Amino acid sequence: MPSSSVFRQEYKQGIPQTGLLTVGLTQDTGTSVTFKPETEMFGRGFNRVQLEERRQQLLSAYPSLSILIYG
Image (cartoon, rainbow, N blue to C red; front, side, top):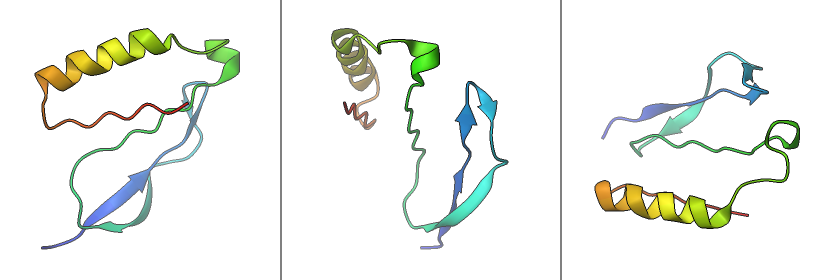
């Protein structure tokens, strides 16, 4: 199986801090998004119950989707 490139781009307050960087190769497929909210923009955080409810809705609609919530 041919390998695919892994890309990364970092943002601060919604503004790109880097261009699109190629950081490696993988045999995996798909897209991964890591979101770490900034206190200045999001205050105290998120409602965990609402996040879990939305997660369940998305997983019901897209059974092969994986959504992990940490924190």
